[in-house]
Image: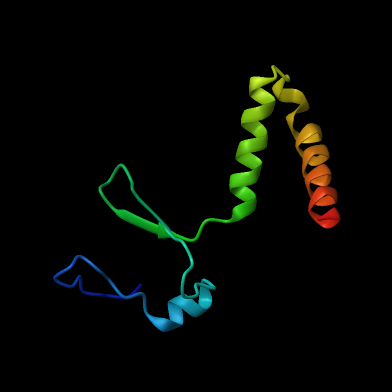
Length: 87
């Protein structure tokens, strides 16, 4: 844990050793949320989490039973990988 100060514009600086450990680089996007205790949580989203959530929502919209989600998720991820490699 590090103590940091908020500047006049509401900005903070993430200490270098924390950026290094979290693999945060210039121009990276971070997410910030407020939890139920009023604490700010800052994290670097993983693109695959977003992709998986989009696939899961698509499966829900298609009426796929949740018992089949894991198998269908893996199939969709393989399909996406093949498409990315073709481009």
